[in-house]
Image 1 (tube, rainbow, N blue to C red):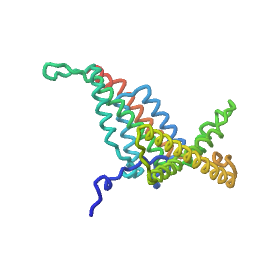
Image 2: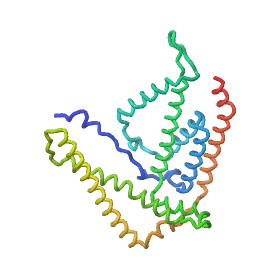
Image 3: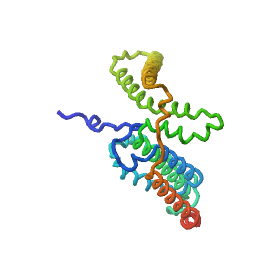
Image 4: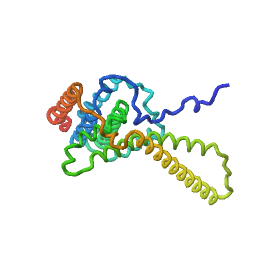
Length: 282
């Protein structure tokens, strides 16, 4: 006897803040190098969100994923409602008109709004992929020392850089752990027998009570995990050890800076001169 079709195709969850095992060149990059490159690419995309920079960054992300040997299994399943949402988003954006204009029978349809929607969608996907690559190739323990080293010049302004780095590291460590706890709580809640109320008001009241119970259980689990993490940190020498680990760029990091800088500079030059001008004239 075969299982139903919906049970065979289980949705793959989002895998973030959990590095994919490997020893590639991308994995060996310093965490601060990855953060600086993401910041530089983000600034480039903020001021010049054209098709050429988007395509260049997409090629960089795909090439990095190829070098790091990121498996396809880490990609989450795309729900069907998201495709429907994108379709209606593109449909409504088409009503904005703009050039280029095509003739559909006796009606002129401007595709400028649709192209802008597609460009923003592609930009969002590329930036999500860029952040995911950092998450899949960087150990969470390397983030705090990198942030502390990058923010060292700010200590002259009496900014608590080390404390911020420790808070960021603890948040990154706790986030996937709490997600797993919440999934277990939700699954256990669904297994409990439910009594369906006869009236709409009774069903609404039961739903609100269930939500309150879930929130209370989530807060309790978070506090318990925080207490356990505090005891573990104290046993290992305190929070100062989190940001005090030695870290810094190596030779491979300078090569990575050079490659990313050349790709971004070439894409920006093409966007501002040849390809960008031709796109505007069309």
